[in-house]
Image (cartoon, rainbow, N blue to C red):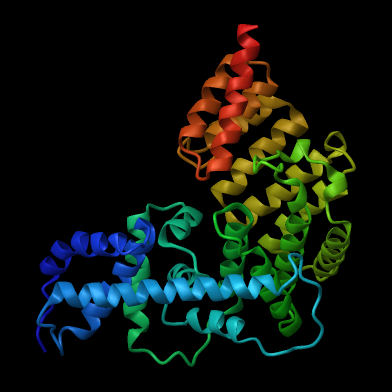
Length: 384
């Protein structure tokens, strides 16, 4: 067995990425394909070193890119034949995609690695999207996925992973589909329905309720030009009452089992928003209480951030700013939350500055444009 010259691999990577980009791949897709090719090189080259490493990497990376394009095309075609808001499906019909989720959540992997690998290999997300969802740098996530691939390279995938890992993957796939570049929400709902039909678990029901309640608000989330509509400004007449009713019923049945988990707590927050006929009627006191439960269950900094905003609504913006002060300012959307609370407190100059700062680090174009408009509106008010 000949050792792999890793210095050579690193040296030719930029050239290989450049070749794929010239052939028509976008830069992020080219990076992902080359990453897959490098993992394959580490597996194959010790026993069968190529005569031309650069040509070998180009060929394998290009095949990986084409495979990813075909997979994405197939998924989009499948989504076209599924209703945008999938109807409940009776029975326990076998689903190969869900089975694949379980297989990728292999016991030989840590939960974090299993989630990352499944999102990349089955969910179809890019390394950049997965890194953003996990709040880590893209390079860190690329290494995590590579290690996971190496771990399972010689392992038989005949021992499926646990339900909790699969739930985490489905949650992240839905969240990316709901807020990101690729529409994966319908597929995540479909698979969560299948899982709920097959597994008797309160948290599975909690996740199903959560995705249904969030998806019910989707028609009101954007304007015809694609710009974002904040929850408080949404036309609630556009919300899907059928999905709301189903989500609330699923949640109530889950909560009645007295096995509270993070997805049930999040769904309870979504249900309280859905129950309010207007933004002014929102029961923010109860929402704060549910965020308290969520923080207790997870310790999540994102949950703490959302709780601070809810405290600002329930007890006033200064109370919200006090709750926000204890959190890491580098947390995604921390600056935007601070801007909103300062605006509500009447400090328009600070709010405008923070909205502009938040826009510079926004993760999507619609979010960036929304924050820029908020800053411009406040600056105009200050000038007038």
